[in-house]
Image 1 (cartoon, rainbow, N blue to C red):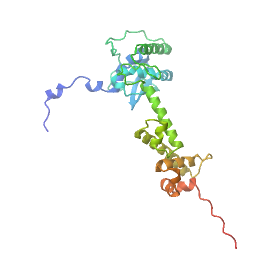
Image 2: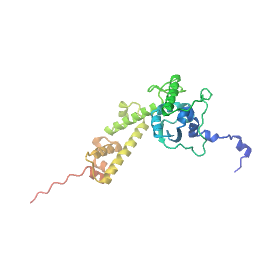
Image 3: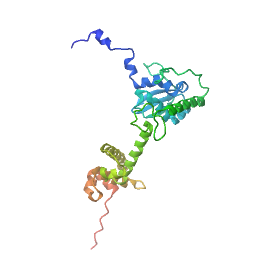
Image 4: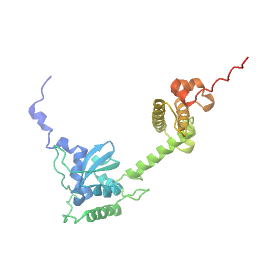
Length: 285
């Protein structure tokens, strides 16, 4: 294997090139510009888990107050390209510490004006710091070129194809998933085409995702019942078992036979859920 000359290897290198591309590093650096220096002094991005940003705070009071402002903080993060995949915030109270290998968060230049925000005196208390954050986000809302059709929050620089902010879109998706799961629980034999009459535009991926989720959830209930060896007083396990068999087999109720139930649940669960009636006594001679 030929070695690359040192001059060529260093030609594309630039200080901090790999670090700047790190979404968490970018959020740390931009945090004072996003939430303001007062709030940034008492909170810091800690980790990114999928679409959720975990934020460390100085105390539980800070966590509670910032939780109320999650939506507006998410909107303020939209100007940062590395943060556009984040849809939720979670907060953890504790000692703020720097991530090893990363520099301390510092104010950055505003994305639109290219000028640093004017320096302010530190807030006297938590209430004043949060009031400053609310005023700053209120200004963003008034000057935004587009707003969310659901909550009126600013969408920032948008191409016009979206009409809702990420939190509202996420909440709408969760409501739709819950409604789909409810329909499948009530009528497990329903087809995707029949579902489309109630939930227009239900995709194959949505249908299968809800189906897999319910089957896994119901099977955990049935497995616990099998291990316990008894049913609860409400007997809800029978309803769960019926829904599981119908959704797993994809058969209408009139085609479910004891053999189908035995194949899907096993002999132990079948006997526990639907015990056979005792045979009538033989006539005495």
